[in-house]
Amino acid sequence: MRKTPVTLKIVFTFLFILIIVMTPFRNYYIFLGGVVAISIFFIISKLSLSFFIKKTLSLLPFVVFVAIFLPFKKGGIPIFEWQGIVFYQKGAIMFFTVILKAWLSMWALTLLYINTPFPEIIRGLRVLGVPHIFIMLISFMYRYMYMFLKVAKDMEKARELRNFGKNRWTQIRVYANIIGLLFIKAYERGERIYDAMLLRGFDGKLDN
Amino acid sequence: MENSIIEVRDYSYTYPDGRLALDRISFSVGEYECIGIIGPNGAGKTTLLLSLLGIFRGRGEIKIKGMSLDRKSMRKVRQIMGFVFQDPDTQLFSPTVYEDVAFGPINMELPLCEVKERVKTALSLVGLPGFSDRISHHLSIGEKKRVALASILSMDPEILLFDEPLSGLDPRGKRLFTKLLGNMKKTKIIATHDLLLVESLCDRVLVLKDGKLLWQGPPSYILHNEYILEKYGL
Image (cartoon, rainbow over all chains, first blue to last red; front, top):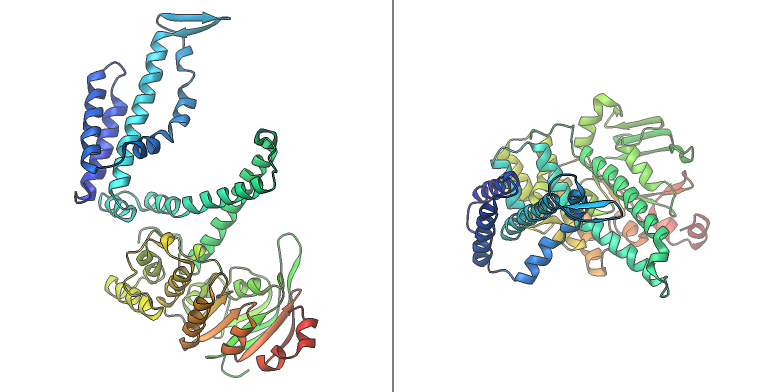
């Protein structure tokens, strides 16, 4: 997998995601085909299953949050009713299909990410003619994501060390402060990085 | 001063919140001179460096090689001056070392073969040949500092400015970086708390406190005078 040309891997991943996302929600055989294809690439990649599942599950709560209201959308056969809130079968199927689509897409992206060093992915996107501004944004995100994660973890440690065993739910306000502080730190860091770019002759042109 | 490469006359800078950061600063820097800027925290050392680079614009006059700092001269001035940030993570914003070191030369619109040559030379100068393909955020602090310096050297500036070049380095890293700085035959301005660094490298030292330039002269005079060190908050 690591030796496959990076452009081929990117094109294949995005085609796969496109097919999965565009498939109408009752065409189960296409989803099944997706699962089989992912499984084959997973086996070739020789990855640990638990690591892979953990990686792909991390984004799922966001999808669940977005799709959670689908089963309550009016239409189709009602499954049950409680206090005037109706739960519909069609909506429920749509809910599970959205989750499956998101999860399969995550599988494909995780396989691409694990099997390709990041600078290679960037090079591949460049070869494929992706506009420079997108490539730059992705590069910055990748470069600073880990740093802010570390800052957030350090602040959480500092909070925990002065928490003395209190319930963390009572400290929602502190968490709000930490999130606010992270935002300010990110903003200020962004300003300094822009200065660093200006000082090395950056003039806003991204075509180089 | 004759043959001065930097001239600062009555320069003041006020922060957007109204606080006076630099108060009527005047000094000049000769070619190939090494200047140390020392002073307690919040004295205005970094603000002064960023003002020399045109990032902060205050009142008064700053001339670099006879050019006043304005919109027209900015591009030229920034090719003459290279600034190494205190935190290398600010300076190294690209995924790979090559891209970071090549960023300046590419913006200078040099041909690709020369960009590659400059990256190679700059990395060799800081003792990291073969680091081109390394991922920037996987490097140690010492390596990051050296790559940050390489990202400036690749533009071949005439003046080098450093903000706390030794912060975060272990003793061996400090010795290595001090030696590296000593070997650079360029005009240097170093803002630091490290008095040993100032003593070993600088020809002249400027003492800043509360935004004012209180004293300037040879480092040997001030660094062994405990009364003056205490008086200036050092």
